[in-house]
Amino acid sequence: MGLTASLLAVDAGNSKTDVAVVTGDGEVLATARGGAFRPPAVGVERAVDALGEAVARAFAAAGVSSVEHVSACLANADLPVEEEQLAAALHARGWGASTEVRNDTFAVLRAGVDEPRGVAVVCGAGVNCVGMRPDGRTARFPAIGRLSGDWGGGWGLAEEALWHAARAEDGRGEPTELARALPAHFGLGTMYALIEALHLRRVEAVRRHELAPVLFATAAGGDPVARSIVDRQADEVVAMATVALTRLDLLAEQTPVLLGGSVLAARHPHLDDRIRELLAARAPEAVPRVVTERPVLGAVLLGLDRAGAAPGAHARVRAHFAG
Picture 1: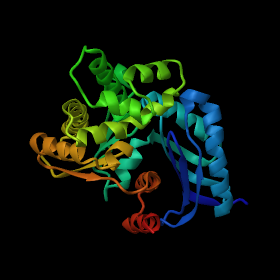
Picture 2: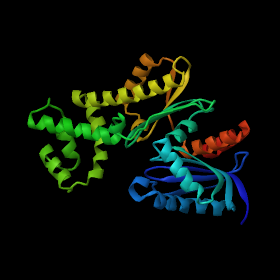
Picture 3: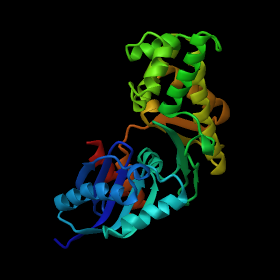
Picture 4: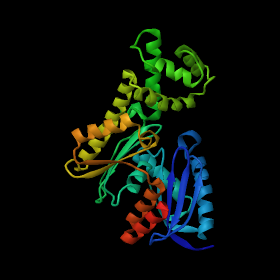
């Protein structure tokens, strides 16, 4: 080999990684899938090593040895300084002549819009929001949890549901069906039994994320406490979106607001309706839509944007990933 393609696009998330090798006119030469990208858990070098396995397979399938540019949208690149560190680590691998790293929420946003303009809110395990304009201006949040003022996502919803259920059972809080539904999910009869099982790790902590769907089902059944938690999540989503729109001077312009991540993509009726109701009141020109496009498409489009590719290239790559 010795050939060079124009672009390597990477969408690396907490559960999987997608990569694509693309020409300057939008022809997708090869794609590959890899595992999770978790630098905080395994360190930057090991995380990039794992990413490299998918890149090597995509390069081999495309018959190339390098690209002109690497457009990487990565989970856990929450701060600009982290983006710079990860960009240096990727660039050191020699995959491309230049490398740009962005938080993976930018991939969700760019995949869902025809031009780099709009706001995206992702609510999966956690919650994040970014916005962009064609002139290069962006809006973002640190999105590293309560330390940076964030609340929600599947993990936060589960913790809040557990808190209310525990207090309902022992009398400190108001009654809620969550006190029965949450332990029942694990085949347990009481919240005390679930608390003990989680504390002693008879139920692994990672399984808490299974409780978010239980919360939504309980809310759909009309439970006031469960509905209040869902309402709070809607308020957080709309608060982030409205602030991003305001920062980018887009509040008064018709602007896409894209909703992504497992919690929002599930289209839970109460959450979805509440988000749209609040957006209509706080950002009437916002146009909400659940993202269905694959985020790796966004990473490709960001790379083509940077290269100044013709519109036909964008349409070609969209058609590929829509097929």
